[in-house]
Image 1 (cartoon, helix red, strand yellow):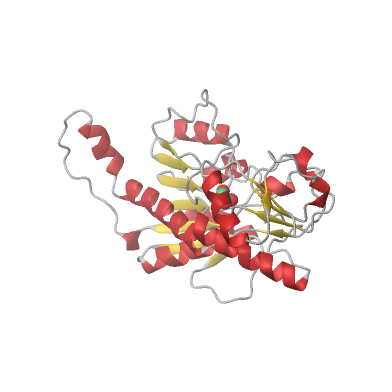
Image 2 (cartoon, protein in one colour):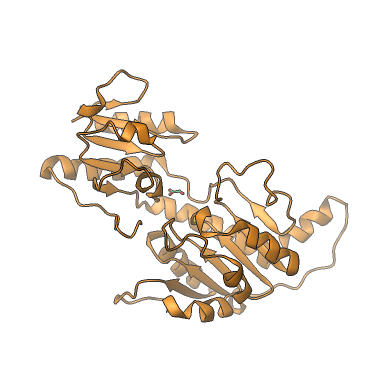
Length: 309
Ligand code: GLV
């Protein structure tokens, strides 16, 4: 079976090495080799150029090398090929750590001590909220969001969720659906967006959304940059000096040097690192799915392609 690997990760070589080891005897090709693209049946990709996807005319399955699949679905040449995205416990642990770190920096006012230290100032202690005094609203309750919500709840935070589709399964936290976004935002001291990039989530965090949030609050975006109207956020912070944001994802990545977000004192910026794909565990995940596909000769997407996540 002919497999193609392409990724734009900093550690792509390490990833490829790990995949090659586990995929023996199957050969994994890369684009720098002279390979007939129309013979490729399996593509393991992160940000595959559309002009390459177009030439993969015999493709049977695409593996996204991350949790998101927007990098595939946005390709004009994508035509309903089954997609397997990574659902990896290590990835969600990483994302939980990132979210928790941003909650704690805000909750414990650690940035104030940090700024004071730069001027050799011993600050008076700041009064901080207990976990049980804070309500954290998780926007998007998929594989990552649900895990974060349940873990934060186990740390005694009040946790509520928001999602679009009503689910019948039992939930450990109260869930607000579509029309009750207003109530969800009104209750939340911290809103964490884990939303995927879809047409429905595009610019969902806009002026009206921000105005419904508490004046003193924190927005954490670890989902996708397309969900946030960055200009509305900058304007909102200008009018609300106790409103903070921690952004890991952006409309344009890398964030352009001249973006006004960089220098804003109320915004923390991290370069899309909240849930880095873990090489070893995701390699095992991919290989297990690949073997399922190879033996059964078919595979079902673990992505709702019409919905986009
Ligand atoms: C990262 O953003 C991912 O989708 O894995």
